[in-house]
Length: 264
Image (cartoon, rainbow, N blue to C red; front, side):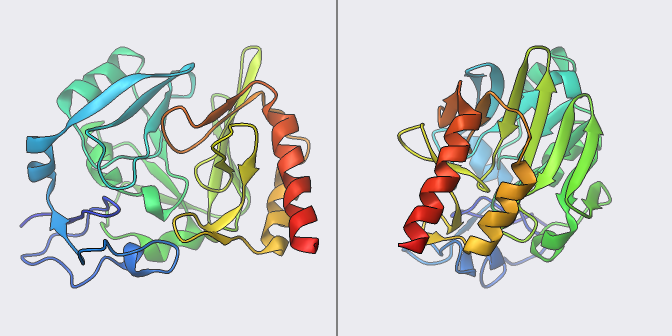
């Protein structure tokens, strides 16, 4: 039986002889069902029409899909921490080989349910590595696996300079990844901080495609969680959507701008 995959968000579901009536992630008001109605595919069908895109996104190795499919996120590899951040819908032997050649992956972490995608398939291809998800978003898991590790609280030290920080607003368990490396600190933002097209600001959204801002109280919580956390660069959810250099000041200015607008 296939693991049916939603064509709009790329999320794989549990084994079933028939696809579900609706993808729960896309029928939620943070996302949307495709304009032509709910549609499904499988990993095999996807692999027949697309390939993995494996290339550097500034200083980090990214893995995406070409041509683009569903939500066009890309994963990022932090070899110093043995970590793969986010999942995509397509897994290939070639991409796995590149990751292994760069030091491998010992764990994965996903920012929020829109990027759960084929996380179980990636874990299995990498040898059954644990996938860290926040407990607050457990209800959105569509493909169950013993490799899923649900963490609680507001911070989780993964070692190797990598720390997960819960920054709610988009989802209750929305998470960013802070990594402190030699001479440089990075914030991998998922959609908790959505890098703007000017790449000089971030926004704080409950729904990105439906243009609904996050509740101010939750943005305040994110601001407090990030206070005092140093970072030079912010990596957004997709290729090139990054703030390289001066990112700490850019995020602080974005918080100030947000609160000016919601108070106006």
